[in-house]
Structure formats: structure tokens, C-alpha cells
Amino acid sequence: MNRVDRLMAYLLLFQSRGLLRAQDFAQEFEISERTVYRDIQALSEVGVPIVAMPGEGYRLMEGYYLPPISFSAEEARSLYLAISMLAGLASTGPTQTAALSALEKIRAVLPDLALRQVEALQAIVHFYAMPGLSLNFDDKRLLTLQEAIQQRRVVYLRYHALHTNEVTEREVEPLALAFVDKIWLLTAYCRLRQGQRAFRLDRIDGLALREERFTPRGFILGEARLAGGPVTVVVRFDPSIIRWVKERQHFTWVDEPASETIMTYRPRTFEQIEGWLLSWGDKLEVLEPAALRQRLAETARRIVAKHEVGSKE
Image (cartoon, rainbow, N blue to C red; front, side, top):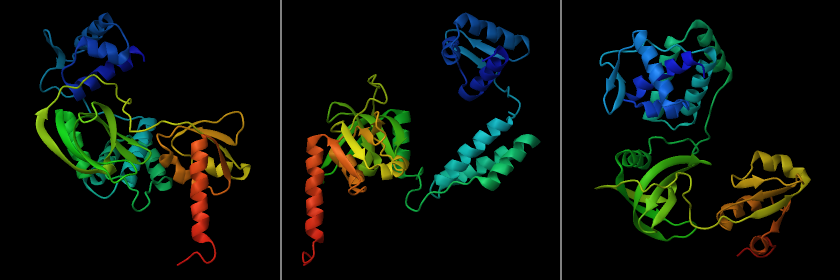
């Protein structure tokens, strides 16, 4: 990033975050603090009213506002695609309404060239979600957990276990939310299991905010795990379906060895991938592990038994 772009980025950060330290700028732009001090001086010399707060950092003088931001054609294209995707895939509700409103506001401030590109995209690019598969950003559980994470409040959960009907009650310290393979996951420290875990929102039967607040324990986001696994599954597919397998690839896929027809997966449990494997009928063979081969064989025998002539009661 050249210096002019960096100085403009300083102003955007000031406007969005308020008070900032030299260390914050240095980390954000991967520069030295000495360079930050020179940049701050340069902004002051061209009339930007930056106030130094001893021991705290820098901020813009109260009442000073930046001029409206202009977007390049590429920036406008990216914003349009992002907001259109959100509006198209989200279920009907406040979030979708706000996204559409934001899109109109962006259109209103675009320069002619960027506006023409956005209008061309509107005519040819559309986003749709199948009924029942739209993203519900206004789910009460999602909103409550967002509040809990921001306020660092303990949350009570009634949680349905994976592939069983066991329901446990526990208190967790919520850390982050992530949308992975059409599933919302909550990363949290579980006081019941005494460790960092990931919880699927669709398995949360009930939740409530506690008044108690917590201090994050220093875990690394992304390291939370669900119970079980992972296990390594190696599968050989019939060449006739390789194209379709890749189109509907299971999200636990991790490797494609020398042979294009052999693929490796790392599910947490057999149940996580078993149904997907069965959907390909006799066009595959599980090479390992042996335990999964046996499970699929037993399932196939039960399917045959139920569908043999004369077996229907």
C-alpha cells in the first residue's frame, strides 16, 4: 500500500473506530510506530484535526466529519454483489430489508461509471435460496448469542447431542459465531466439559442469558471441536460419477490422491458422512477404514431386506 492510500485508510479507521493507538495502526498496516508518528504528523499538516490523548492514543476532533466516500467501479461491483447475495439468500425479515435499503443508498452516491456497472449487474446476476434453505439472520438464538458475545455474558444451553436423543444442560462462555456448510456454529468454553467446544445452533433447544460476565480464557478461535473424530475415510468412486461427486462434494473432503477417482475425507464421525456416501449407491467403494466398510455393508443388507419381494407387511 502506498503512503497516500495508507493515509486515507487512517481517516477511515478514525471514522469507524474512534480512539486508536500508534500500535493499532502499526499492526493494521504492518509498519513501525515511528512511521505511524510521521503519518499522523503529515495528516495534521494538511489540516486534519487529530487530537492526541496522552497515554490513550489519537482521535479526530469532535464534530469533524470526513467527506462522503466515493467508490471505484470495482468497489461498487463488489459491494453490489455482497449485498445482493445477502438480500437474496436471507429469509424475509429486518436483515433482508436493511440490506435492500443499504443497496439503494449505495446506488444514490455512486459516480456514473460505477452506477452503470451496477445496473448492468442487476440485469444479469441474481441470488436465490431454495425454500427452507434461506439464511435466517434474525433467528432469536443468533441475535441473543451475538449480544452475549459482545457483552461477554455467560449463556445457559439445553443442547441436543449428535445422533442421539440425549439432552444436556450446561453453561458456556460464548466466543464467536461462524457459518460453515449451511450450519451456524457457536464457539464457546463449555463449563460442563471443561474445554472449548463448538455447538450447532440447530441443536440448541433452549438458551438464556445469565447476568454473570466472564473474562475470555485466551483460547484460539477455530480450534473448538465437536465430540468425536476426526477420522480418515478413503473412498474410490466410479469414473462415471466423478464430475457429480465434485459438484456435490462433502464438506469434510481434504485430499485427492494421484488417482482422480480416490478421495479422502476427515469427518468427525461415521454418521456425518455415511448418508452422503449411501446417496451414490453402488458407484463407490470405501477403501478404509474397515469399520465404515462394515457399517455400509450392514446398512445395505437392511435396505435389501426391506425391499425384497414379499417383505412388506
